[in-house]
Image (cartoon, rainbow, N blue to C red):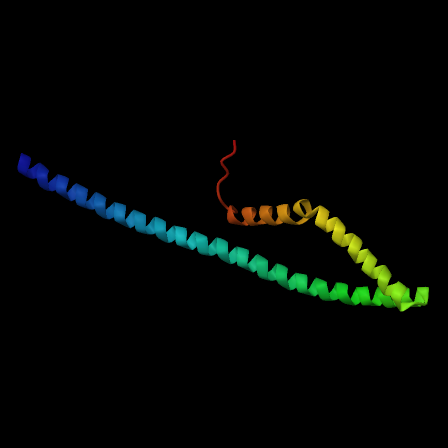
Length: 125
């Protein structure tokens, strides 16, 4: 009876070893594919944000020039017109500088975290 049990145990452990190796390989492959998916989503969001940022920059540049020339005609001085727009941008710069963590950093961090954990089961109850 021992002779029959020995090959069955050996077969069982060989099958278990093969199944474990296949499982580990598939888990590694799943991890790679998940990382690629998350990375590609982050990359796509970064590139689209960059394109939108460049377009917004040029729109703001030309709107600012237009306003500066308008104020120059209104004040009858290029110095006053362009100075008014420069002062406006300086005030906006100071506001963003003082509130950058709340206005810029936290939303970016939260967006990246949301993208990384998108589609994952929630552990909250």
